[in-house]
Image: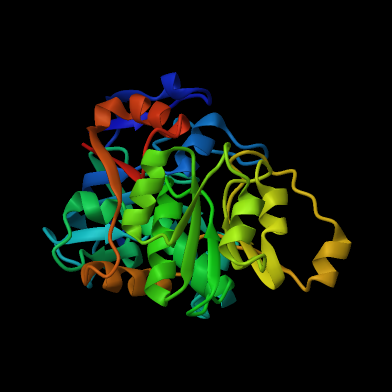
Length: 342
């Protein structure tokens, strides 16, 4: 098969479109003909290399995958050859206490496609049967691939961790990102008031179209001042944060007493600090969030299939242009997801 493979860590130039061995499935696995694979910032981190994380080399990236079942193992009973499916991005042991409690994202063996196992930037990918989910509604392969990781992450952050309530104010950082554009929609679906940030007026206009109530042009406007202006100096109930150290202080200062900050990433750096006096005197909550459970993904996909939430796709590109797609994602030129087609 053809695949995007990198043999060493580095810049986008290490991504090669080349021949790779066809995946060999086990009895409980499924071979999937990939029709679409969407990019995430995780792909950038994996390609560059992460300290202390032994990414297996050579490696095929790609966590968000949709396609058709090409072959099934002898023990597979739930999916059929030819079925259109979307893959839950997270893989876990399925046997530990966390998995059995429905919190598979807390499994100590949890990983994503394209992280510690080969991913979907290829003609074919193998998957555990349990990760195969029928394509919901009338979604196209491109739409389906643009959903899993970002919508699952955003849902778990806002609903599972921050417990966002109708009528609350939420500050969503980075509207143009996949996870930011998902968070805007989820927050509006719940009935919250959404304030969001982006780096250009064009992106802010798109955020408004998704349902954002108020917008902030970061880099030119003060996040703290604008948030206080929009909330009559009160501050927001929830900050949806995934940017990292570049905005950390502003996010903390934008919270109302009793507010919650939930974070899933550190794109601009991980060295975040907080004055403990502010933390306890304002009764703030700092919440970490990583991915989400398969059961939460089923909830999200039901809403996606009913068109109550929808994938935001910036563009589609041939798989062979994966290196260029990484450059676009790194430069933050996109709004929403970049989807690759084998």
